[in-house]
Image 1 (cartoon, one colour):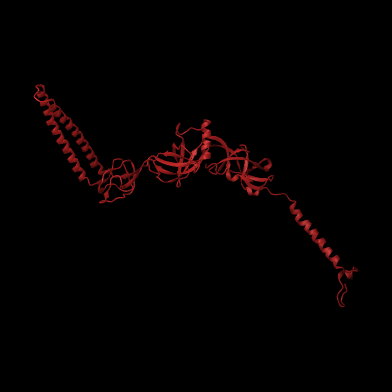
Image 2 (image 1 turned 90 degrees about the horizontal axis):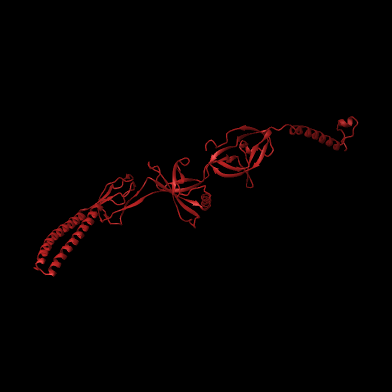
Length: 398
C-alpha cells in the first residue's frame, strides 16, 4: 500500500516491520478467541445447584369406591286438590305456602242445596219406615185370618209382598241419605295428605265444578325422594359385584346413598335406595333409580338439583396421592420419586378413581416412598433436588 507524502510512518515501519492489514486482523482474532474461551468456559464447569422441591410421603388411607350422579328431589306424595261436588266457593281457609295436616279444611262451598237434599232423603226414610210399620200390622192380621180361611191365599201373599217392598224402599232411602250426607261433607274440601300447600287457583265467588276445577296442590315434605339415572357401565359393574357377593341389592338390604345440595359442602344427607327400575332406557342407556331421605325439618324442597353419591363395595386400604402430583406422557401417568442421594426417578403408575382431589394408585408405588408434589416443572429424570417434606396435599381434608 502506497503512502501519500506527508503521512507519518506507523510504529511497525519505524521499528523495521513492513505494514500488512492481514497480519493486523489476524492478531485481533487471536486476542478475541483467547478471551472468549477463557471466560464462559470457567462458568460452565462449576458445580450445579440442586432444585428446591416439596415432597410428600405416600401413605395408605381408607377409601370406599363410589359413583357420583346428579338428580332432582321429588315428593313422596303430590296431590291436585279438586272438589267432589259442584258449588260456588264461599271461603278459603288456609294460608298459602304453609304446612297443612291431613283433614284440615281448605275450602268451603255453598252447602245449602245439599243440606236440603239431605233433609228430603231423611224424610223419605221416615215415610217408608211408617209405611213398613203399617204393612207389618196388616201382615199379622192376614196371618190370623188365613188360619180361619177368612182371606184367600192371594190376598195374604200380596200383603206379605208389600212388607218386603217397603223394607227394600227403606234401604234405598237410607242409601240416598248416606250419599247426600257425603255431598254435604264434600262441600268442606279437606287436605288429603300432610304437606306444604301451594297458592289457591280459585277465589271466593267462583263456580267450582266437581272433579274438574283444580283448586291448589299439596306436596309431602317428609320423607323426600330423589331420582337419578345410573349409566350402563356402572349397572354392569354393580351386577358383577352382586354376583360375586360383594354388594347387596336394594331388595335384600337398605343400600345407602348420600345427597348434597348446591349450597352444601359434600354429601351430608344419608338415605337409602328404595326403587330400581326394571329396564334400562334404550334412548339414554341409563337405569332410573330412586332414593329416600328423612326430611323432618323440611331442608329438602321438591324440585332441587342435587348431587348424589352411591358407595360401591366395602371400605379398603389404598395408596392415595394428590392428583396434582401426577404427570402424563402420551396417556401414561407417572410421578417423580425422590430416591437415595435425592436423585429423581420418573415412575410409571397405574391409577384408579379420583376422590376429592386425591387419586387412588393401584400399582407402581410403595407405602413410605416420597414423591414430588410441588415444583414438578423444574425437575427431570436423574436430576438432584433439595427436598422439603410436607403433608400430602388434600389428604388431611378428605
